[in-house]
Image 1 (spheres, rainbow, N blue to C red):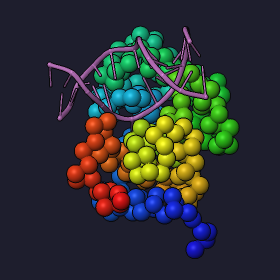
Image 2: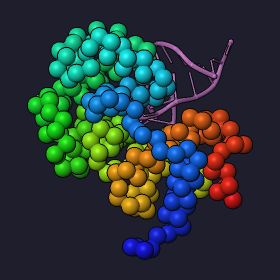
Image 3: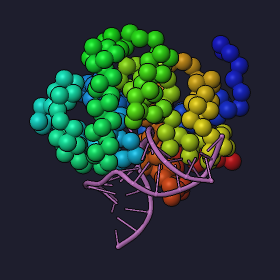
Image 4: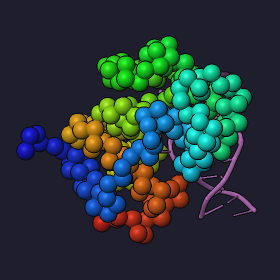
Length: 221
DNA sequence: TGCCAGGCCGGGT
DNA sequence: ACCCGGCATGGC
């Protein structure tokens, strides 16, 4: 026992154990490279992952899933290629913003990017138009293996339904709950968030919840 | 058939 | 500090 934890921490650990026991390891993020993770993180904004996969596939099929190629690709052409992901015009713009950021700040080197101090890097990412808190943290955790917890709509619904946060809690507050109560461990943060999404997709974190068969049901008092 | 998906931004109060 | 409309495809 390294440190004592409060009731919230106990409950979070219980939730994690239940999810892991039920679903097993998730092996996230589903991608072949760190760069693909970053592109996917932007494409999946408010969008079904299946549609994102199509968009990624179309980029791969045209052998364009590389920073320099995409950076030099006309925005309208990029928009067409990612069409299945929805919001394709604004996402093409956001991707372009991000590519410019990579080139200008890190000379296009993900290795250099990864060597930056995490807090600085997070600030930089958030300053890119089109990259908000969840997208930035997804890039940090799933592409660069930085220890930061990703919060999404599923996460908020889960915590609020289990009485750990208010429904309208801010991103930073929800994130703090995880990061102050869990070991600072990339693998744990990776797995936990992935399990929450798995739960969300299959069970009871939809806008219209279906809780009958939810594996967390025994934890609800 | 409609509702929804692993957000974010910009403008208005 | 909130609140809201816009952005868009494809699955179920």
